[in-house]
Image (cartoon, rainbow, N blue to C red; front, top):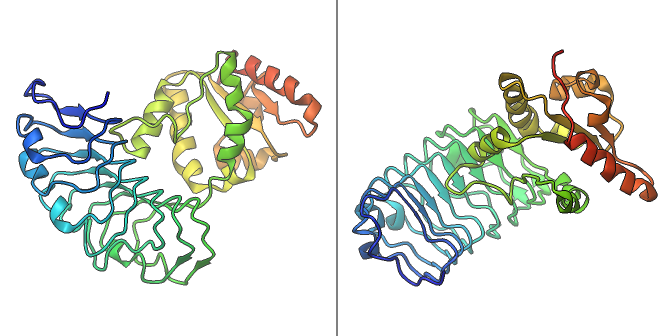
Length: 329
């Protein structure tokens, strides 16, 4: 579609509005006035540079706002101050230059995504705010140094996950994380992603369909919720096993733990391992709670060091994806 304003003839009682991939340059509060029960607005992939300060006064129940891939530049406190019920805010892939306290009024906010904005500092605020924040995404920014006081604005928050992957950090000053006592997971590395895209995605031409975190995230869901939902709906769970995976707390503590519980609880014997490196069975068991003996041999596929064996690898993987593992028998 090529909308440049929100249609006024939609059902008045809608709770979700998807206006993504249009030509909107603003979301005028008057356009939303018929739809006061809105909880979820997806306005991603437009050209919006500023939020209407009265938007959340018109839709006071708003909990989810997706502003990814717009032209947002300098959001101010007034633009979001009335969004008292907002829980999930995605402002990734904009042109953010954060000044003042733009998120000070959103005390219900739990998930904030500001990745891919060319931000040069992790310091999003000067004073403690966003007390209920659980997830903060700062990945793919231009942050090269993490100073001791940069994350002080999180010291009264409930932050559990901080994503600083792909930011090319060169310096982390001592004490940078000392005020985030609730932090459980720090994501710093995603270098296996490009390998998966190069080596695994071509198999989708053979009636396979992979779920990738960036490509297949579910609109309106947090990153965590989207991962859980995609695991639940997947027929096979495929682990590309490297030292990075085994050392990544995000994978160890959340994704793997949840995946294996889903497998066992739903009696879905559907795990496939792709071993990119020679991993000792003890390390595999300790990090992923998996042993080779729990799977059929055909469901453990080794990445070949020789290029001429790549076709055989692909064939073996396709066979594994069509097999079951018969867990716990």
